[in-house]
Length: 333
Image (tube, helix red, strand yellow):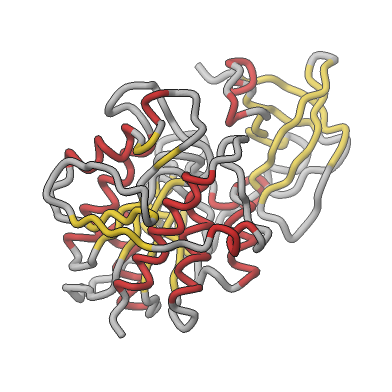
């Protein structure tokens, strides 16, 4: 069953135009941090009577250090949905809502534009930044997949990259929702981005946070396998972002993470794996390995996120920068 508690909003931290609101809710005499998906629930105000989902905090999950407002009983019961929308996301749950999907009957393949796929949201800003350094005239956008946070408004990184002009757009695909455009499938999102929107390249990967179980297959990084297959099937050259770390305490993530090794082992299509110069690792499968120079100092000076999961980890960002450089280099002249 859902872990739901009733409470009262006692403090509001931010206001429009953010897609996500941060509030403090008093529940059973205790003040707790919570987030509100504004697109789904509307805005909360101090004094509102709300129901919050407390499961992540109750379990002590590091990436879920806040409650989530499930419904606003004071002002959230009069919503009418989006006019003309008819395709459900979060279907058959209490949060199902209708969207207008981008998919159309037209199918143009093969697509000749490259796709980068990653397994951890922290890789996104470095990939986008490096792509812009290599191809300042190129338009690259983000397709949010399963594997991490599903709400499109949860990522401050995406908002920052859009404001800087480093992303051409943001499409939420499959179970993720709330982006600038909605797609039923990752394949549909990739096709729309390139064939309709005219993006020169796409970056596909999960939202913030990651699902994990310390097992080979039970983690959100497996979304990279699905994204790579979808992109390759549509004719996109695929660049896989290697998850690497020089400071993670867990052995399975030191050097080349077991997340990347597993995806490469299972891929049915040949992809390019980019490594920062001097840090190439042995990989399974008949994939293309490229080593590229990266500008870590330039990235660190950009003001974009420079810590991974609370750690200083130069190798993590150097590997993501190599992916962005390879994506730019794969783009047709």
